[in-house]
Image (cartoon, rainbow, N blue to C red; front, side):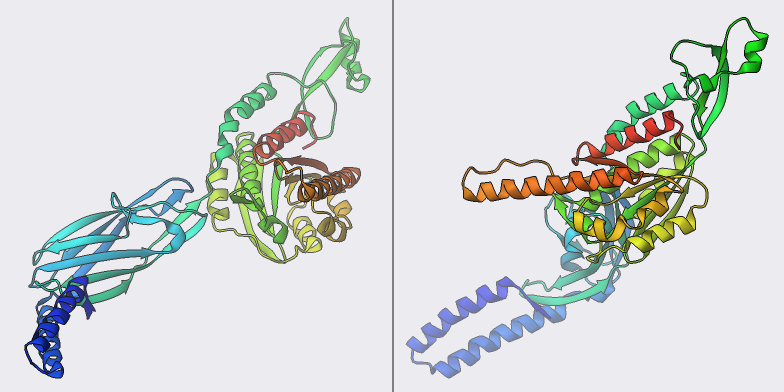
Length: 436
């Protein structure tokens, strides 16, 4: 049973009636019993005459996937299977971060007025605020009597969920990087001899060419000195390793550090997939929480996006030794391993640096990290201390980057807007140099 504001208003009027009756000499107890009895009778009659909410059937259709920042469209079809007209309301409750409203109202409630056997379609807009699965909570149908004083209510669970995929804003950088990739792919021969390159063609020697590229047999047959040209291999393996420990839970602006790293990883995966490389993904903190074998070609990106949609950082210290062991156990042949992490000094010195040589000895390693953008500071004493802290943090980051480079890793450390394109350029540079 539910009561409405109309009954409360009527109760207020009843209080005035009680005052009038008392003024006419009626005992207060008698006046209260008469007025309250009338209210109870009216409310009970309204409840009895209200349509049963159990006779209402609700079906849901619509989107089950949506990209963060966009809206998913769903429809609730409400049918009245009972013999009475149903007047009341419906509330479609979701998780708070789902941002679900009845389209055009800004609320999660819709008014119902259904004759017996009638139906209505209610459009629902879901505009989530975070990645991951956003489930419904319950659907509540409230049926009121003809007077609108009271009614019946019933809530049922709704088995529906919308998966919110990463927004991938860095995809705007993909066309320019693909254009560079096409230029590299057999159109401009790379005149270097390096590990991981394929023979392309012969041409005449020009000053500056590596003498190790001279083909002496071809030179003996020709009038000029001939050198071999090389092009990068296309079918190499790229392994994206996400550090999902506590350092990647820190917020930079409106996003977590992990969200920014995921965006950079998606751009790299899209580029490597178009280049014909095999792309795999692994997420690790204290254990391996996600492993996706993306494969090659256009199918790489959808598989990775689906896998990382529900990935969230854990507030635990990352086990770097276990992370490196997991990578070495899964990747036998030489590959490009891109480690997405932070450059915080303490966890790297104690965790990653001691085990990094085992990884760089077998693979080409790139460490990608995001730095906080510079913010203006006040000129007072507090601002002075803040500037000192920022300078110290920058010095620690530079020290970590230098140590990682000495151990054979290439470091890409950039702000949120620059990390994804710089990482893509680093991949293309390595590919052009034949180091993949």
